[in-house]
Length: 161
Image 1 (cartoon, rainbow, N blue to C red):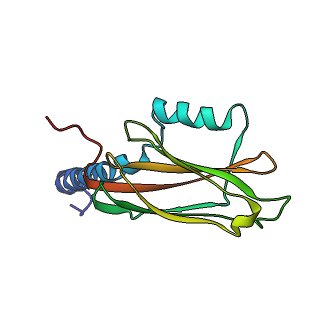
Image 2: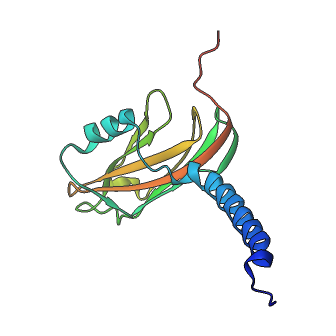
């Protein structure tokens, strides 16, 4: 009788299948919150109001939010947009959208060529763990986007009774 008989292989095979299934379930449960990329309808409507029928390109917009935030009441948000900021090529506006907030359009900032750079740092309130979008409107009419995901342990923007 060799080591590959059905009788001796079945306990090992069953145990291996069981352990690999548990491992895959653990891996899948850890990845599921991060892999949900669909935008909420309110956020999609806010973005549609900003860009209209124009297309949005990825890049040029760098949005930085801490990946883990203890409280959503004051979240530091840093934003920079690549642009020469000349009279013919500059950032006109940037709009920040938070998918999980009751009112997704957090704020808009406006720039001119005299701004020098299209950078800003501010604090925002986030209702829950979510993806935050920044959409830059350039002087040539193009739109560029960037995003950041954050995990909020204590939510803000909630109503207390």
